[in-house]
Length: 166
Ligand code: IMP
Image (cartoon, rainbow, N blue to C red):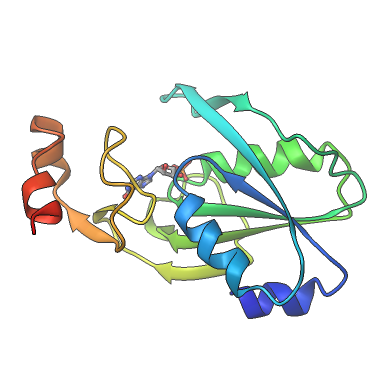
């Protein structure tokens, strides 16, 4: 993906990482690029899960008008987050806007959303690690693991012993 992005944006790119889950992926991504990107961050919060409406919690520091922008996501699931961000950034007049995600769960898509750079397609399984969390836990695992959502809902720390044990 880094090679593809570097090839497509030889004259520069703004990477917009979506906090917090994409941070480990972004860190590896930028170090694999052969171009010099500008990196900025956005954070959004779901305030009405049923409607899928979200609000911006942390906005960009830079102006993306006339810039080539690539959004960097950890996982695209229903597509609501990506759809919102593409629309929001699109209103700011970028020269181009693309989306990059480590994981893509297309089976759960509610809104068709274009994904230009995709790491892995996954199924319905819930995943943790490499930025992905449950109740803010497990983000610092150096790998992605499959977890049982029912077990986590019962006890968010259920996997701590097994995953962090020596
Ligand atoms: P979407 O708006 O439904 O596409 O959801 C995207 C967000 O949901 C991601 O950025 C994650 O924060 C979260 N998410 C979706 N699936 C998982 C998962 O399997 N593990 C952890 N977080 C997830």
